[in-house]
Length: 388
Length: 210
Image 1 (cartoon, one colour):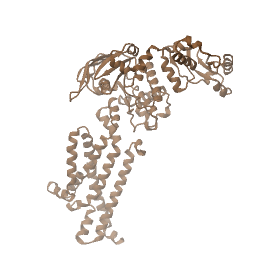
Image 2 (cartoon, rainbow over the protein chains, first blue to last red):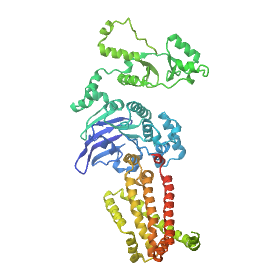
Image 3 (cartoon, helix red, strand yellow):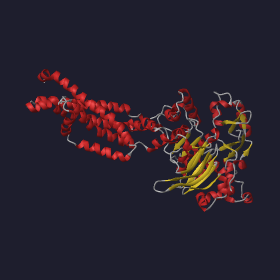
Image 4 (tube, chains in turn red, green):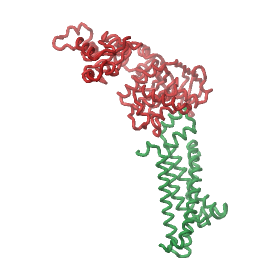
């Protein structure tokens, strides 16, 4: 838990970068500090690892005042990710990842194991370990930047506009990744950005800052539902406030009971399922209905001589948790060209499927208003057939 | 040519050795003093202007005059020559160390510090490796200068290839002048080449191509 108690930062020339800020970040929370430049959001974040020392007030981590701790030791306990990645160009990916463990004098095997495990978490293979950062794409570099901040099991991770320099698609996938890692590993994240979409997408709580003060500190839903004042409203923008009224989750539109096979089924059996149910894609689950992957017709066709059961040929599938906002899923479908996206519950059990057809319904509703009008439209010529 | 080597060959070998000895000790001392000083100056930018200014002034003292000024302090022989050459070697190394360190990408320094490196670790593991090519360029420059200027050291009795040149001048023997000058040039080139190899070795891999 991180507590700010009346914390101020006043520079020598009298400018108040942070002005009497008090708030609490609970363990395991993803908190986004957002504001325009000069709002004090970065200063607030940098005071947590004492890259900037506060002028007055107290910052407590788990009840202990951080001023009582050696700054170097404090920083080694706190992960740090910055926009320009800060990867050391003269060090290999491996050396970069284990920078803090090395400072903490871990033994070699443990560092190696950690680096390999973390690389795997961000879908990068061990062949990257001996490369140099400049041989990597921007997105890959920032993946390394992120796992470097996790390598020494830091409980708190500070991120200063980490994805600001990336293209929208790469940024999108890294946001997913960070959110996923944070939920999986239960770390506390303090994230600075000026991008409201990013904040709404990632945050458990958002702190909106202006002129060194926190204007509103609440969950994204509460902020959207009840903006504190006009400043917050204008910061959110008309679009987002309107969207709120039509906020739908995937649960409302998903197709229930998608067609599945279990991972030990043979290819012949699954192709029969496809034929019977008139679909070209099957979701693979284990016996407890936990989503494992996906097989499609092409994959089966290509591998029918080589493989016996579906788990040998199934591929990873992108999925969302139930309760996810439809708008973010729609965005992903359009941007990345998914035909459909499975929805799983907390335990990973497959619950349903959002298809492109469900999106068509939504767009239809938005354009034509309520259902009555929709039904009055002539439908005999082109009826959209679900293809999953 | 053959006559020259027959008459002066062994003496020449001795003088080359002396020359190299004086220069390398002076350069070595220069590196030992100027690199840490340059690093230290990056931590106090106010002092940096003063110290670098001072080193620049020392650099402008005519070399012969500087050598002569050493005599009241250290007498004659190798010691005053080494001290004078050492003073000359300081500026290029100092200035390059300082600028090289200052030019290290600030986000690297921020990241390293934010991850919990101590100042010493930051300097050793991040700043010095990143600044190495610039620092080495300064050392190479000083190396070539020192070899060339060491020829004047003979004037205050330090020996070296300057002995040939000054004798040649005094006795009107052009062979001696040439026999002193050419080895000095070759030495300077060899030292530059040697330091160049070292530079490649200490340059981080990421900077060789870029």
